[in-house]
Length: 214
Image (cartoon, rainbow, N blue to C red; front, side, top):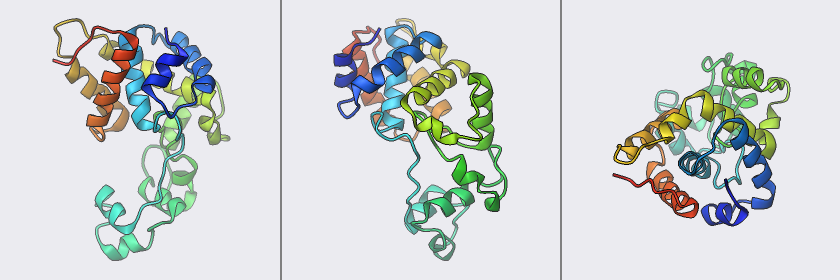
């Protein structure tokens, strides 16, 4: 299904020896079992995790970065200055009272910040994943930073959101539209789409899939 040379070709920065058994286990368990599915999964993984080297969200934003990324939360320079370069405070503000989190003072935003290959975020998403995989991620959210759990949780998310089906594009179909839809489901938008597509092309080349962009 996937070899160390193939993974290294797709993601030169990744430690292929560590990640291979974790990924193969997840692929088998969650039916990511064709070149098309694996290529799409790894393309998204490469972008979201900086080639499997970053499993925790980077929230070290400047004031300008806060205003650009969350304009509703930080509408003015003065408000942004109060949180700039304070990752814990930023998380507790931007993720408050949504995705299952409590108010800023609960600390849920920081406790359940983005983790894992696909940057799972929010107490509600942690709870759903915990129940699906029978592991207490609410008490130990840092487990998503372990390669084995990062791969397993990403595999579960991928299958549970119907992404295997979206990756199964038959010849002649508009596969780029399906890939964009996969991006939107994982990211919530189209952030980094050009890089994701570049990784996708690299992954398809390494795996020998005949799927092409139309």
